[in-house]
Length: 229
Ligand code: C5P
Image 1 (cartoon, helix red, strand yellow):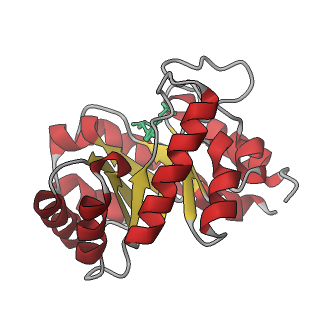
Image 2: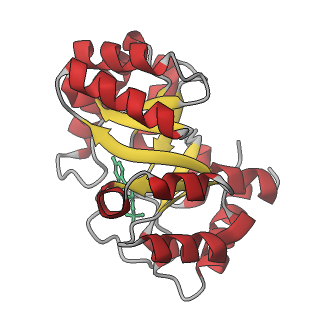
């Protein structure tokens, strides 16, 4: 598959401390990636005004992993929708009533995908157990009306098999070459991620900490385009 389709599947985790660093990284990467992911570190530091800036050039995934009682999560989803982001997530561990409340709130924002985190890719539980829990949580999310899940590449194919090909899989834990795994446990490279059915690859430190972040993003896209699918 061509390179330029692949860059639209890359979500760069903007795990930096300030608006100026985030915007500088956005400008460095420019159109070599399709999505920017804003997580806890950046959102707690800079808040909603940054989202408007980033949305001018890229799709934005607000990765705050809401995990609270149904009413609170539903209100938070409404607030995320009002920011105009294209993807937001909750933690599937919050249970079915919470997932249903989130899905109901997200219906008011048809341009925003709602995703559930299954098992963190940094979790140290054995792989077989992670697969079982991820599958069970993916089914729960699907039944509650969510659009997809965050999972590791190792679970993506089975989740697609169980929940259908249109059920979105977003996969962090991407590493290639001899990159440091850092705190991630269930890792895979960009080619393998696409071969296992990942719709979006979340990549943070392998791009942020590269000598040339743009080259690293392009290298990931090139590897993805070699996938046999
Ligand atoms: O730097 P690295 O590529 O490991 O970053 C992964 C990103 O994906 C981080 O922003 C992290 O918060 C996020 N993430 C994750 N595992 C999940 C959900 C999100 O690593 N299950």
